[in-house]
Length: 72
Image (cartoon, rainbow, N blue to C red; front, side, top):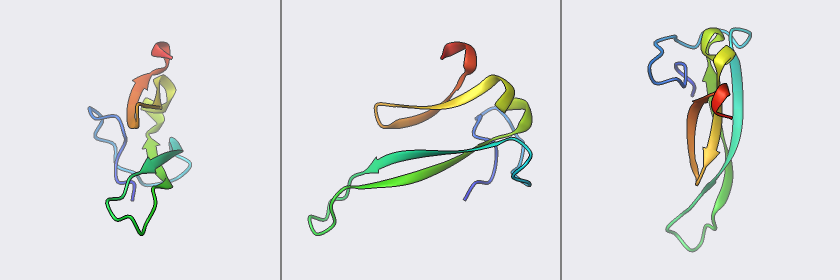
């Protein structure tokens, strides 16, 4: 569940879908049980209105992180 803005320095709490951007990223999850193969699952990330103007979310090397749009 999304509780707050994905920007680690932002304290905004998630309240409404129309306030900010809700992003979905497909991620590969590895399991240690051979009966259950690795699976693709969505990760839901929310950026508040202020942060979504200057930031985006990226997946690099299997890790999801927030970066400024000027870094894109």
